[in-house]
Length: 209
Image (tube, rainbow, N blue to C red; front, side):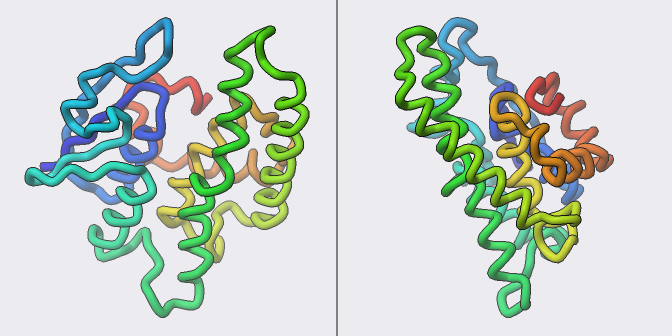
């Protein structure tokens, strides 16, 4: 049995989505954020020393990092239906989007959130650097997606699940409405039955609104 250690309003929502798409049996262990700091509770450190989510446990094995979890399960479950196999013409694109989400896209979005939390103490000069970076990344993704709903050969893959958190955070803090291709792709993902089932298992997810 797989246990998904699910922190509210976090990257672990996309792990629940992956589980539903793959049709896996799993248990959700929920964790609430500290209402003042918005940090994860210390109980998560009993699962993984960094105390962050997502984390899954399976037969005594602990696996962290959403990219690693998604890549591993997509390749080993459901006959690899949500992955792109080595040697396939679209393999490089698949790996690119799977890792671009956290490797490039999330940093400026997270910086905007963190600097914004400082209120008046936030450095205006930092925001002047952050906003163009967000615009650059979202414009790039919007152009690369074009008229497609999905990132790899217009076929739904685990890369779309991994990219979903980027679109969620951009929708909440980054001005996603300026990028119609991304709005359309996000809606296509959220319309999938497995996405809706993941919301039912994980509870309220305002970033998905």
